[in-house]
Image 1 (cartoon, rainbow, N blue to C red):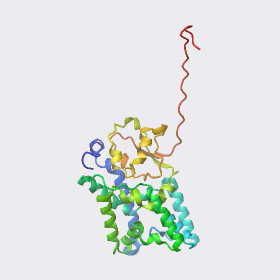
Image 2 (cartoon, helix red, strand yellow; image 1 turned 45 degrees about the horizontal axis):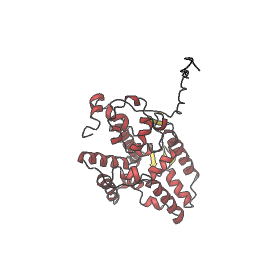
Image 3 (cartoon, helix red, strand yellow; image 1 turned 180 degrees about the vertical axis):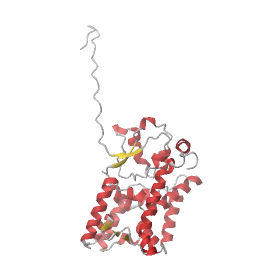
Image 4 (spheres, rainbow, N blue to C red; image 1 turned 90 degrees about the vertical axis):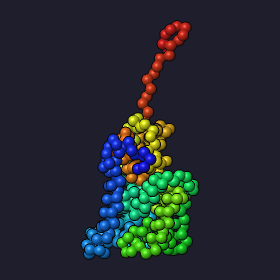
Length: 301
């Protein structure tokens, strides 16, 4: 973290604590990839398949629900195990937050993070502006393409699927696509792909909108307005309502766009944020009745 971003947290908490969730996310991403690679490389088939569909220990099916939705719209009825696998994945992400996939599983996340890291160090500011709602239009387009073509048309160009399959079976021309996204995020738009365009991110934000696991600004009264959390967050728009109590909002970040990456937790020297369970907003406390005094009589009314 350059230019003072996170410097106070680093000095206060130390390097390990101020990077703990980043390290955990990288361990998760590499660990999941390693499970897929053990079969082809070492003949140890703990997991077979890829992020689209996989078998774990020859018994647990896991299906990408976004791919399943495209398949159904393309009028290809999947096998029962694929439906079960999608149900398991949906249930998991509905509990822990749909966009946990984006920050803890997706192979494109380190690419986007690397571009954001380098962009900050090079001091690149500004760039193109595209509404974050554009990802929902691309999500709709991907589903419409499946319905119109009868094929999984989006999966032919989906960077997430292509990169993961490429890492397992050989990247080939996928390198060019990954490099293009890296350069786009670096020079054209901060968090351009993951934060504005990726339809998978849009899909999982809908899945996790009501999830239980959340980031909470539990100690928001201690905030010193250093803005470090806004700078490092790939979805900075989700922070303010919980941090500042906008329109009486509670301390829980409720937006489905939050990916539970933990960046705001690490970078905050005041330990304002923490992971916790979703809680209903507390009702505003009743205000004590102040008796009105009659100027003339000097008595309470």
